[in-house]
Image (cartoon, rainbow, N blue to C red; front, side, top):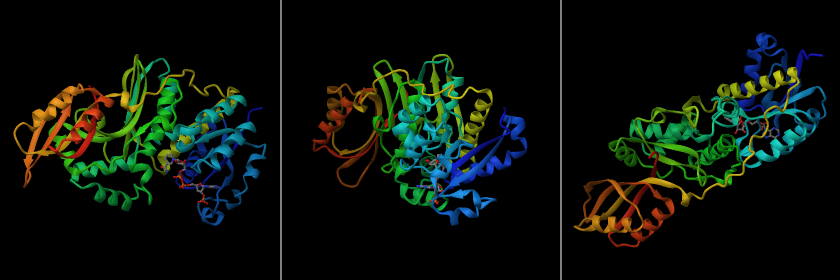
Length: 431
Ligand code: NAP
């Protein structure tokens, strides 16, 4: 018999949980026509019942007892929006084991324990969907698993953290220094009280692990991703990059190369003509390259109450349709390959260097001789203003070189008296 009402439970009623509650409410009139059922939230688990009471029409749905949800046979879908590893992991595994479908936005958990969760869903023939875990409201997991499944994906990269993109935009457009831009992001609610996960690139690293796994059909976990944040970027770097026709963005990059997967997050120079260079403020965008589709770009809100809820509700509706068609667990884990992940030192990149060197004849020749020894070619070199004293500022963009060789060259240069300071060392995106 067709279910006229499908019961769901929310775990968490914070930013995203409240958004999901609102979006479902806004869809109430159309839901049955759209997906064949009403989705009704039967229970909401929170820690603080009092705090949550004003966010719902009927506070009797609130609980802090997980067993009330787990042991309720009427609840078919659990929507996990608590965040963090525990108790989210234990709750999701138990729900899947009990034959309930699960939707989660929890990138911290999925980037580390994704395989375990997907294996449990497969074993019990239920759905585990996580569209909101990467780039919030932007559809990217389902497009990769379904619409783009006819491709061998070569690259998935993009701007997947809104906080850092907002900060870099302010540094670029208003000439702010990092600390000033971070303070503004905090004041406007774009940065959390503890911004570490965003500014150190950890949040983006989790999303890159998930994106790489889905795009290349091979498991990449958070620890496989090389990560650098944006805390050392200065307004001067951004100005010099602009002079060289580039912008600086925190990019998450996953690339499937002949000798393995490259997965990293770092601030990079990107040509100002690239579509990602004009993705500003707190917006996100993911750029994919596949052997059939070539290039495609997905752009939108990567976080926030309603944009993230939009992705979560899309997953819930998908599950409702699967329940009606009796075809749950149709698309589970898609990691059927075992491709090694390369060390960062084995990737090949171009580099932007801002150096302070001794201001005398022959110093640049000395520097390029060390570079040549380690196969580092110089593509562009600009001598900036000479400072008071004996130091000159030099900006270099190198040709493509293996990162391990580049690091050895820089170590050797650092030992020379003629190199006073390495002020910046950034990678450059592109050929
Ligand atoms: P949040 O505002 O901090 O809300 C978390 C909610 O979970 C609160 O209602 C909290 O209840 C509840 N909770 C936490 N631990 C709990 C526990 N042990 N038992 C019961 N309830 C618990 O978080 P959020 O921003 O909505 O994020 C939720 C998830 O979505 C995270 O995985 C996050 O990474 C992901 N996500 C968020 C965004 C975004 O824009 N915020 C975007 C994409 C993905 P109390 O308030 O009672 O403590």
